[in-house]
Structures are given as structure tokens and as C-alpha cells.
Image 1: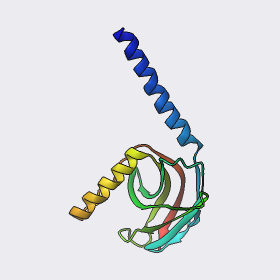
Image 2 (image 1 turned 90 degrees about the vertical axis):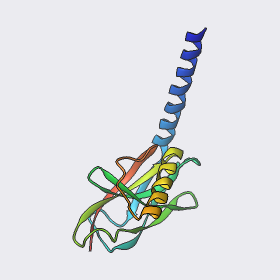
Image 3 (image 1 turned 135 degrees about the vertical axis):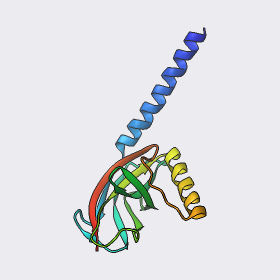
Image 4 (image 1 turned 30 degrees about the vertical axis):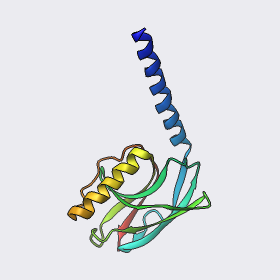
Length: 146
């Protein structure tokens, strides 16, 4: 009986995570501004389109340098199809390249980002995140700081 119970629990968890992965795979998003290869100021608006975003997900714009991520802003979704966010990348020196990544982020990733912001506010230290839990990269553009 215990073996049967364990198998049922295992099947439930596989089905749950498969459903979450399939839901995330249905989300589509694009960064339409700034353009790939564009020059950007220290603080600027980022915008784009989105389709299929689940109610449990948030859109986030993050800066990626190498394998490291720094969350910048939760995107404000308008009418379920367009989004915008503000990026403040004052820490990057003029002439330096980096990537903007649009992420669909689930509950665990949202909590991770909230904790990261809370720690940063307390310590004034914003270490890179190696990955963000329950996140799916939807698009990426490479930019260079003016």
C-alpha cells in the first residue's frame, strides 16, 4: 500500500511540474524597444508585447552579464498584450555592453526577487543572481550604455 501511495504521489508531482512547464512554454513575449544593438542611457524605458501570460506569472526585465542576472523592474502589462518597464543601469560604465532579458516568473521566482530587493534595501548591496527560480526567458536584446 505504501508503494502504491508513493507512486501516486510521484505521478502527481510529475504531472504538476509538467503542467507548469507547458503553461510557461505557451507564454510569448518580445522586447520591442530598445532595439537589439542599441545604445541606451543610464535610465530608460523598455517595452514590448506579451501573449499567454498566466495569472500566476509576472513579467520582469532583468540585466544579464555573463551568467549573472540583476532584476530591474516588474513590467506593467497593459490590456494583456503590451508591457513597459523602467531600467536603471547607472552602475554600468559608459560604452559597456549588457543584455536585457524578458522573463516570465512564477511564484517562487517572485518571492526570490522580493527577498533580493529587501536584502538590497537593508544592506545597499545587490549581488548577482545566478538564476531565478520558476522563470522562463522570453526574449533578449543586447545593448550598450551611452
